[in-house]
Length: 342
View 1: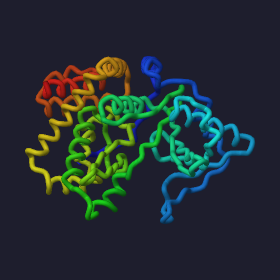
View 2: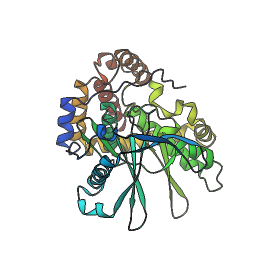
View 3: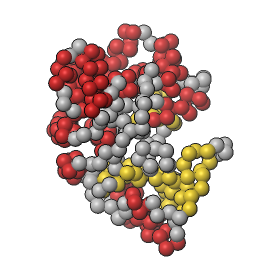
């Protein structure tokens, strides 16, 4: 079972990481910063359609601030979605700003409505934690998912990742007569492998979503991480493997019913081959990112020592002993992917 004993410590973006973000177009000036959204003068709990507390709070701003804040939020949304085409904002309305106090980055969630068709979307404004930035970049480079986000000084803006939260999916969809358990189990195996290879931790059911896509004969599933705070931070190897979180047991038990050891191994090899291909395609960008990560401190010293020993045993590779930081460990983990798929 995976256990996380303490709340993660946030880390500032270092000058070298900032330079990397500028090089790859992730850092750019924004008309509003995270601290501006803290100027609300009232807030109320937000309940879902069943009347349950969502643990988010809707915030309200003084009339003297409201117009400016909402206008700047629309500009940021246009920058995120249309590469700065401000002509789209005349059709947009900021419907609601919600605040979450329990999450590591204390995010604001902004609900945007398009007045032309009443379609709505969300995006997030957060404190820019370096761990999360590394997690977002590695997800963008090494997974099949493209991520839109930008940073500006201490502010991080992210697009919304649509999908059914893992815990809700397990409550409402595992008993669906149309569920294809083999395809779902296969995707969870591949998701587990992606997280472990790139050292993304804490992927319990509330931190990933399930996306269901109808195929011409059946349904296709994709599992996507939505929380990247625990990138290369924890010490225990099990924290980087979703299979060890008790919150995921219902999917894991289903996989044990439908998967054989041989098929599990096959899907692990398939996913590692895909990761190796992405590493090759983005080798220069990945090299730049890992080089910066090697200079950064985004972990506790005791976690580094525990993970070195855990991975040395797992891979039967004594070279993990020489790792001086989490960047070194990540690099060695990725090298195993290349060796195993060569």
